[in-house]
Image (cartoon, rainbow, N blue to C red; front, side, top):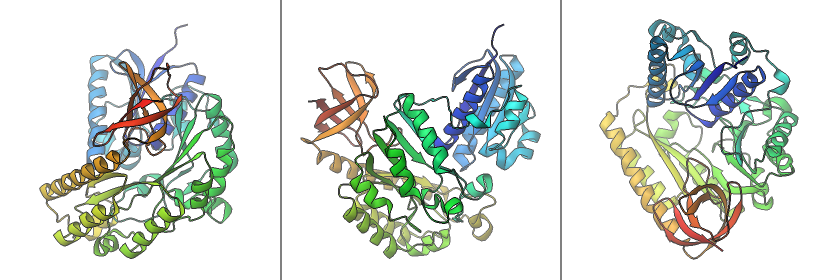
Length: 431
């Protein structure tokens, strides 16, 4: 009997990707022929795992649903299902606006999705996933939800309060990943800073990282995301002393001007943020700092923006992303403030910060010319290779483009001497 084919499409963040990988494994166990992010038709079912974070991400998800609704109408696909954050947040509206979808599911309706596709749901295999990333790296989602109440953020409405997974389950999953060739684990959650408080009465992130580092086969461990308020300082000695833990810290700051931080309900001041950065750099020499900034938040003045610009200039982050503010219904900011920064001003400020960061990144990269770095190979490209240093996370950071006399394959490590620098990438030769 020919297997039925299902295409699972993932929109949004790496946390969504993990959910899709869990679903793919459950469906494959149920005898479906599964693919991820495939194009075209010919599928008995298509599942779209949506993002509902900000306007642009929501629109991308809606456009994807509409495209496949048309494909269904043409007869190019069979059933069409929608799950994830957008569906969790707007299910009734979506059912009215796009009735071509056979059924909408929330973010955590994995069993209901399996039932709909006539698959036995196996919670005992929830730690097993069909890895969709290159086989040498994978994400490990250690918790769901968020206990913070940042004024701009709609995520807690979709994910609920913070809920940690047990250390035992996470180590079990890390072993599963390592047996399948994963060498780099990216620890992810909406907020790593709260890990373990709900289960163990205190933050256990440092303990978890130590246990994961003991899993045979895992070579690199990377942390996304730690917030500046309630920062778990006991993670810093682990980053400094454990050779498997990358000296890389992703800490979304969002802003630095005190009036904006207060309206954002970030529960941290500029002075506290700058003291935290100094402590991190002192305790973890050579650490690469990644952050994200949000511009155009209600009430952000030109003076606030210039303070942010000055802060970025002085701090010289290794990696930085910028988002224009999106006025999201249901959030504190939506209820309390007028969206008073014009869209063109938001975009101009975002572009100005990225131009500033581009120059900072180029200067930091030029300082690396002549140095040698351990690089993990991500792919072969032309006659050379593309990889990343310990200071670069996949998809969001820079890459190392290099040549090697010795044949290499994805997941191999090479020592690369940097010979040239671009705005965000390094050029080099394996030695």
